[in-house]
Image (cartoon, rainbow, N blue to C red; front, side, top):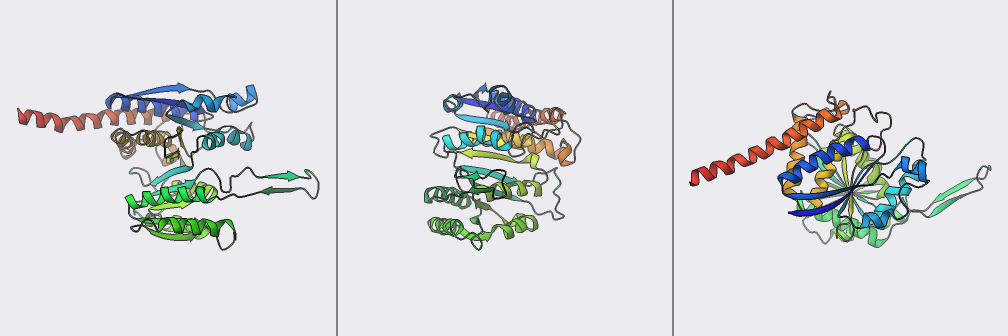
Length: 367
């Protein structure tokens, strides 16, 4: 039996609803696939901040480091400035554990209506550089409150940072349809983006089966709305990848569907898995939250931990529940969070039984 230590941080708002839903599904999948998932819960987030003046324990990173993966719900509250909540928990985790790839699938799901009139299926991956770029800590403010008040934020691209994101994206494209699109803005941003373009192009030349297209991010955003089915893999800087992936999930029906993985591909440190949707305080505690993003993130976690069959089983189950009409309100359905979760659990069991039947039939025939 494979054993994995998982650090669970439900966090804030609907994180406290979708994380238990996903854990229920993961535990059932683990039982069926002979996995031992050891969940350890950490009550960090904005409520912790209100009591302690920090988003996580002082030795929080050391506590997380002994785990194989981190399963995060959501971070954020109207009572805590976003800069405090994000930079006090999620970004330190991403950087301390060198989670330099943020992977976000964008896919059409049966049972979920897209706002687009066309019916072409969408299936793309967005690879976001996750440790540097526009989200650097270099900068500051001066003359606060005075007419000459000013602020400066410095974007930092390193050859290593761009190179490893480009390699990861090119390998993904090479394993799929062989089409890689790079998001740029080199016509207006004259230093960092041309550097990004040069390093990406150099890297992709090592993958002869991959075709690279470099596209200005504003045109790419329009393209992602008008013809999203034409994309395969998109690689983008920290800021561009963040924006494009939210847009992509909206095009497929709801940001509540979107999963993500913050990856340390080498496995030297734990990777973190979280939905894209955030804490959604306006619906927290009402049973309206869509747990698909969290459940799908759980499937990505299983894949990363080396269990592709278990991951595929979980993904097939939530897709089956959506196909059968058990969507939550944000995707046009009427199911509550708990009702949808129950439908996924039922689908997990149904799929397991269906998989056993051919094996039983073969055994009877052989006898």
